[in-house]
Length: 168
Image 1 (cartoon, helix red, strand yellow):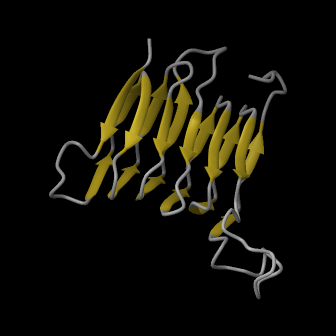
Image 2 (tube, rainbow, N blue to C red):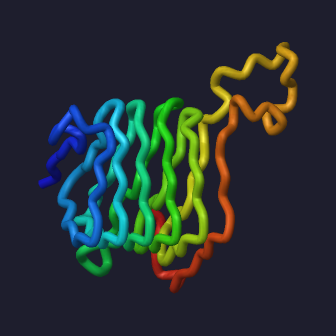
């Protein structure tokens, strides 16, 4: 059975939460709260089947030097979903293993994804549903030159797999 935990309910007087040098077992959905900045630094996150981290409100989420993986071999976890236009994801020097979709970026969320390893993930980085507010008659006719509508950076990532992971 999956459960939901809300990061940020711990202390709303503090806007930046940092969890470091910790091993965390996730059995459900971790939801980053509204107007919260949360960072995982040097952590190992072990996910149960179908578990997920969700940022669908205004806020920032950072993973630095972390390993995010499934608990039970032969299963997959749902990955990290960022789906708010005023949300920001930073992923730096992390390892993602056995995710259905390791990083899902939607609805104009900002992101920086640098020097990560994706192993046996069905989808490593999924970027979709951007430019929703783009009006094609405006002065910006090319969405890739309209930096106000696209704020993302991906570089130096590596993808590997055994070829054994089938479609979720």
